[in-house]
Length: 473
Image 1 (cartoon, rainbow, N blue to C red):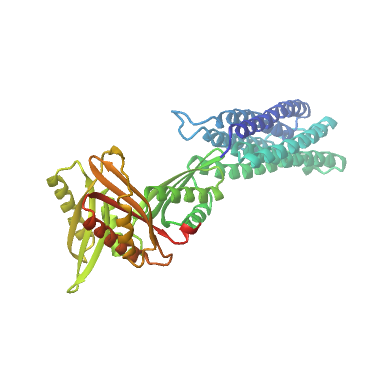
Image 2 (image 1 turned 30 degrees about the vertical axis):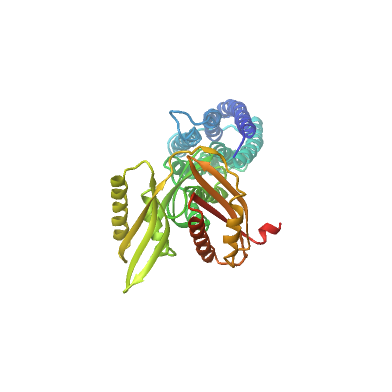
């Protein structure tokens, strides 16, 4: 994302080029008005009117770029970028107004009230200067507009690029008027209003281009083809099952995207955040610096197993299930599971909670014929240790029990502590690297059972399995 220094530089560059355009418009408009009045040329007067509206448009563009980069606030929560789009829309309206006036005056001079034109050297000088200035500011405006994706500056650039052509058409009209006088061709006297009509055609063309862009932006029209490209790109993000919705709107040079993606209902909250960030990054590859909001929708995936479906129902109820066991008995599926509940709950509260969970599981997974749930207490308080206990008295017995299991290579890092008057034992066991995890769990359970038999004073036993390779490092 942009830092404050980049934003400040962008604002200064946009405002500088817009202000230069205002100064140029003042000078050109003044020259055209003076020469148009002295020569009586409708072509030049129409160009003067056109340049006058250019001045208004340039002033509006300068104002809009000053406002559009302001950050979002309480009343403009998507920022102020729409000021640029609104400015471009007003420019379109001004261009159309210019076109109507030019057509009206041209038709009047062609068919009702002919006006004698007196082309002068100054007329050609002013129009030539106008072409040079308009070409210069159009290039500068376009360069900055494309650099910062500014619709207001781009509208100005398009506006002034047509001024180059319209001024050229006016010069051609004046040349034809002079040629008509020199070679006695009367109909060439009408070249000036005809040139004005040509200017009007150019104005209509530019107005139509601006209208399509600005109306699309003001009415939140999405750029052509971008939505389908976003769907295609986001769908390839790891963890996204489907793209349900994509909405795009533009405010000035910034895009806002609102997308809804389906994820597996078994993913964790942290994982869903990672997938959402990946989806947002995919959108920004197509729309740099876009403000992207990703809504995650939980959905069952085609790869879900029966175990996944059971966990999904538990997760939906904000419960943790483990030690899930499923048996097929006489072609009927029977489920056994462990559920952890807050240790501060009463038995009746815990039983009612589990009963509702089991009913919901049977409803969502009709293949299950019966469910038996073992209720465990989930700790809700931090226990205070009474201090460590000398573990040397336990080590020989634990080592001997460990050696009775062929898969157990050794036992180490033995710790015994007293908490709340009860003994807690923790130890590490080394196993072969390639031993299946299911077999490791069976051995751990059996080892824990033997330790309880031989050492009934132990209240809790925790065994941490380690691969043999890890202990050689």
